[in-house]
Length: 412
Ligand code: ZN
Ligand code: ZN
Figure: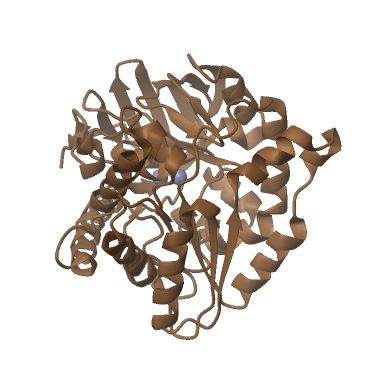
């Protein structure tokens, strides 16, 4: 581990991830997925998990070099393969009550030199195979959490002017501050932050808006909301009853858009790091919920491949509001990592919607969810379209308008 990473900070991050993030219960098993480079954080998480009374903690590690070895050496038919038996096992563990923790932190540009068609095939094969493991997460059936470790390649990307070692230390500090762990009592700070998010959630739920209308540079978007949509944010109970904080950091309140009622244009305000590539200056036009035009100044081919994954990939499944004054946005750091960048800005997500953002959603069939405006796709990719130049109105069923955000800040 880089000497510039403060081991105490790393330990506290692990503690908050276990206690506040996943809120691991006594006797509960924990499945961890992480890049190999995050091993120092994984080890601390394992310690805190067993101290919290974990049954069995099982980490699964991936390695960038091994990932590249496949692209560079495998036969063509390999790129449609995925380890379905592995994901089936993970799905079984969730059914048996296990919790889930994911660690992010690998190289955001890992696959930028690889054939986009192969990258898309691998991603699709993985998404299909991962369904048994992803459905319980998307449906919020189990408590889960995602946190970040400042990997070397990632740090070099975020702070390109610093020596790598220094960059890692600086990224650790940025993760620490963004994750709201820097105070005396991070657990109490998270409770307060969560209560603040809950106030916004309660107001938005009371409004029962029919749509949101966004205006800003390159953006004029009428975004219908799903029938019976529910706003969520901060800590909330998974269906297994455990109150957890899925994302650390989190600054968003979010709900389900109507996959067939989105019209107009929208321009991204930050680059999107997606599966080893960075896509910049995304601009799209929606018609009846579907993206009918899409451009990017860099990564256009990757964007096209992403949108072509399946029918739902060119529709949206999440809409999220984040004030421009959020600490991540104010840090001015562009993380090239969605976990952070999405929490610096209002965003929408291409693809799969969360069943629990529609009233009674977890008991509805996919067809019933779709009727209410939910979306189905193998992908869920958030991209950022908020800034201090974007205004948002809530539109009621009768067409009445209520300011929700002005110049990127809450207007209520
Ligand atoms: Zn989001
Ligand atoms: Zn999302």
